[in-house]
Amino acid sequence: ASDVEAADALAEADIYIAYGRHPQAIALLQNALANEPDNPVYRLKLLEIHTELNNRGSAMEQLEHIRRSGDAQSIERAEELFAGLGAAAPAASAGLAAAAARESDDGPGLPPNPLDLMRDTGDDLEAEFSGLEIESGDGVELPDELDLSSDFEGSEADSDDEELVIAADSNGMSTKLDLARAYLDMGDDDGARQILEEIVSEGSDELQAEARALLDRIG
Image 1 (cartoon, rainbow, N blue to C red):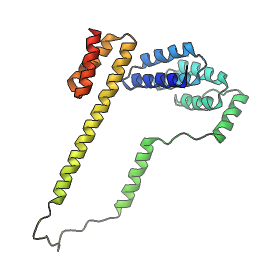
Image 2: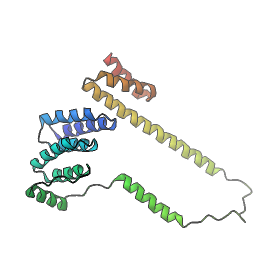
Image 3: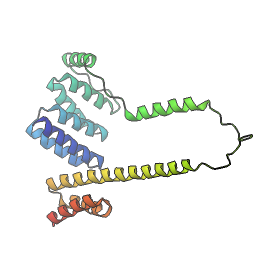
Image 4: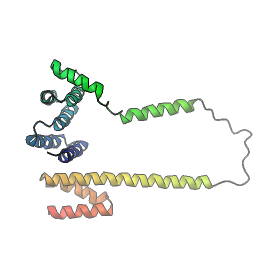
C-alpha cells in the first residue's frame, strides 16, 4: 500500500475510535494488514487500540510482530505503548534493544502533550497575576459621560464566540458525514443512515444536502 493509502486507513480508523467503534477500527486495520502484513504503522495503531482497551494478549501479539520487524523507531514506540498497560514490556532481544536505544538518541522526541502545555500555561498565568491586588473604589472619580465603546466591543466578542461555536459544530458534522461515508463503504447502511439523519436535523444547509443525497442512495 502507498503512504497515501496507509494514511487514509489510519484516518478512517481514528474516526471509528473517536465514536467508540473500536471493533470496526480493528477490523479495518486487520484488513489493511492482510494486504501488507509487515507494515509497522498498522500494527502500532492496533497496539494502541488494544492498549486502550486493556487487551493485554492482543497487544502483546502486535508488540512481538513489531519487534521482529527490526524497525528500531517502531519498536521504541511499541514498547512505550505497551508500558501503558501498567507493566513494563517484556525484555526485547539485546540487538533490538540496542537499535531502539540508538534511534532514541538520534531521532526526534515525541511531541509534548497539548493538555500538559495548557496546564503549564495556566499555572504560569496564575502565578503571574496572583500578586496583583485590586484596590477599592474609594476616591475614584467617574467621568461625566459614560464611554459605551467597551459595551460594543463586548458585543463584538460575543458575536465572535458565536461564530466559533458555529464553526466547531460544522466541523463536527463534517466528521460525522465522513464517518457515514465510511459505513457505506463497509456496507453498514443502518449505521450510516442513523448518522445521516442526525446531520439532516442539525447540520448546515450544505451538509444537509449531501446527507439527503446519501440517504437517497441507501433508499
